[in-house]
Length: 150
Image 1 (spheres, rainbow, N blue to C red):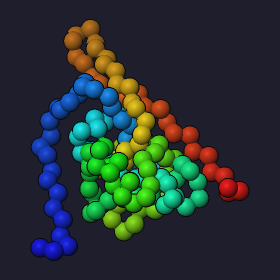
Image 2: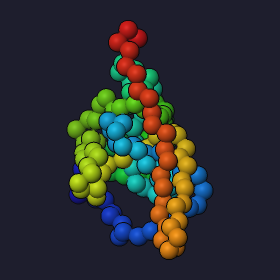
Image 3: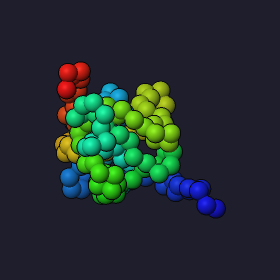
Image 4: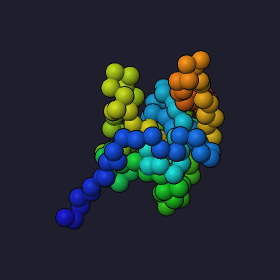
């Protein structure tokens, strides 16, 4: 139907755990950060540029429907189309009426909603003596300094 969007929700699985370069994703308020594979649609698009209102570290969310997740390449393409560019933002200023759903939730992590940034993200592997392994995300936090004079 016109004006209706559908989203395919993948079944949970382990995919691309250690392959290639990762990008940092973060929540809209710059509170939580983690690493994500750029070829997997796990985060939304948020862009800097002429669309930013007050500060170079402020982004504008750019999505087609509520809860949309895109690959990093589609994120870059969307930013260019809106006259902006991908960035490592400090916070999202404008979400529109569709883009700022969820956020970061420690009690219900399945509701976390992430946005792509330009920062690369080192991934590490921690192995216990009994052989159990876990991925360690080690992203750099964006330093957000708001300057009212600029």
